[in-house]
Image 1 (cartoon, rainbow, N blue to C red):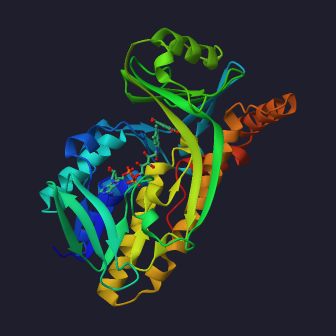
Image 2: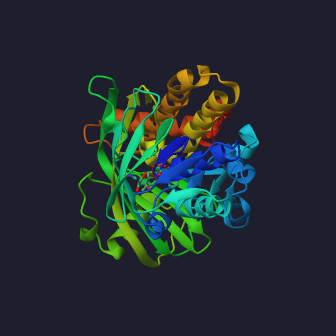
Length: 388
Ligand code: FAD
Ligand code: DHB
């Protein structure tokens, strides 16, 4: 088998890249280790930045998004029993959209297949050869058989636990890694969300996030121990804790819990995001705590830059954008890391914190809530910095 760009992974990064290349006439094949049903049901992210929504509409994958996505003008911060509204539309003229990542993935797969795109499901990449040459090869297993795909470029869009990043020889990558002493216990609940926008709650019992998937379906998160056993929490305990952490700032409806899981938290960036003809994009190159809602959006930004660079290679025979790919992405990636860290340290309890740290957090929240300058900085970062 042969193609121009072999893409490993049918997550947001890999699927978007294949569509961006296809509209420029560049051939690709997407290899995905899981089944189509599995990737279309995986519970993940839910928030699209302003430009990411526009990108989905522009490529023709925005019909359902525009009908079913929930447009929010801003977010709310809950602290000391009060809700503070940060109005992105007013502050920076931008909105965010709540639309489940699995719906994004469904729409991208459907669009790709309708255009004749090639996605091989249950096709696990097992190794890469010749990434330092101009004729790389991806080895994979499909239908129980070992197979190969020869290509010009490999896009490693295979997430944090994929094979692309570990295929880069030792000593090439610098890894920046920071752990956090907590995780999030997340549930999906058949109940209306407590407000019309997301609530990020700061409370002495720990952080809580009140998000949603529809007017009758809530996505709710509690700060917990990184190794917390979700099964130790009864539904009643979870709702009691969520309610306590709202601190009386608004009421919380309870409902049937449909899903429950714990996500540990980590910030990781690898540099550079390229070696030879292998280009990393999305979670394969960087992850961040979910407090800033950046993961899916960064995955899209990386592949916009990668698609532009590949178009310059194939159409204009120029490789300067490919050479600058890593630098271009990392500038945005580090700004997203900084913002995700900022939101995380602003709102969570840390085991070694002092009374001084708590008062400093409260002052910081008061500053964001009361200053147009501080609120504008939050709004600009949360709703998504413009693409370079
Ligand atoms: P992935 O979505 O991980 O896709 C990688 C794909 O590669 C997978 O389908 C995988 O099966 C496949 N694969 C792996 N190995 C191989 C192999 N060897 N061969 C073939 N295929 C392979 N982000 C946001 O923007 N907003 C949010 O609100 C948000 N909330 C989150 C909440 C939670 C609880 C979690 C866990 C994540 C959240 N994120 C959020 C992060 C977001 O989900 C990820 O950043 C996003 O999925 C990254 O997309 P990706 O395409 O890079 O990787
Ligand atoms: C969601 C998750 C997040 O981490 C976040 O910051 C905002 C929304 C969500 O799942 O809806």
